[in-house]
Amino acid sequence: MIVKKTPRRKKKAPSGRKERWWQRIRWRGLVYALFLFAFLVFSVGMLTYVIFFRVVVAAELEKAGGDILFEEPNRVTVIPGDFPPTKRAGLEPKCAILVDDMGHHLQIGEQLIDIEEKLSFSFLPRAPHTSKLENLAFSKGHTVLLHLPLQAEDSSWDPGPGALYIDELQLQSRMFSENLALVPHAVGVNNHMGSLYTRDRNAMVSLLGLIGRHNLFFVDSYTTAGSLGYQLAREMGVKTAKRRVFLDNVVEVEAICNQLQVLTEVALREGEAIGIAHPHSETYRAFRQCLAPAGALVEFVGVEELVR
Image (cartoon, rainbow, N blue to C red; front, side, top):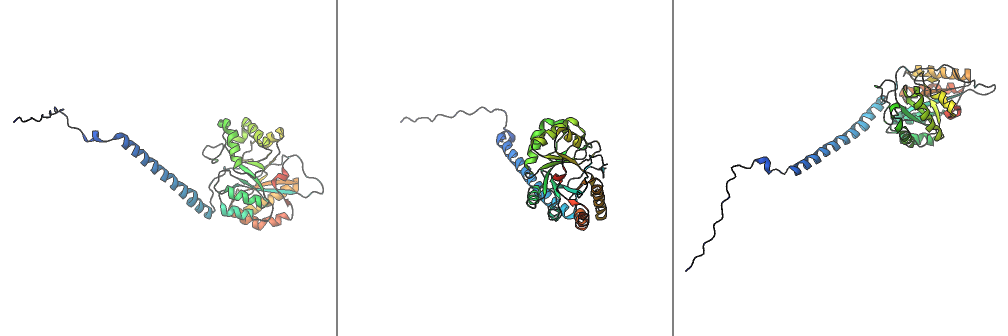
């Protein structure tokens, strides 16, 4: 009987090395998993920021009457009367009050819009409540403007999202169009900050050209004595006006009422005047107390009636 031998398997020669634990890891899969984890953490962090800061913090600041965006300091409170004569015999003096920085304070914004006297409102294009408030102001028959953020002289003063800068003029047209689209009922523009931007001739000529092509007017907020906005707009044939009085540089009811009196005195002397205010609770209370008495001396009109 013949017995078949089963062939023996050859033993592998020992390699002399033992496989390490990290050599058994699938690195490509691990990197992919880590990337997904990092992306998830980033997404949760951004969502937390939006919910907490934009909703909770903003709401608390609004309840406290606090400012979310700050104006530049040391603003000229009353602008000297270097305007062409406008007063004519028999005509009632006119005042326009422009409330700008609108869009961050929902409750105060709604209260100001509900005031019976004629007011105009200028909206920051990328503020969280701009869409709702500018629609409300328009529906109530108020004049709506775009409050355009422009570069400040001090770099520590941030004009906020959507701002135009003099070293980014190539972006100016696109940024302006995007900002304007966010305030669809705007019939004019006034500057937010801009103490550096409004002194730059090239930047302002370019900006005023855009404003004119959109058939808008320009109100120079006059945040710096060196602003060229009003002068250049007149030279370029863009309808324009200039702020005469800041009403609430001092955020106290009595001080704001005093500034309203200054505004009416300018209008009585020169025929018309524009004042700028901001959405403070003190400003609202001052308007409720002092606008009606001032209205017995002057006619409150939309700011568009005082541009030329």
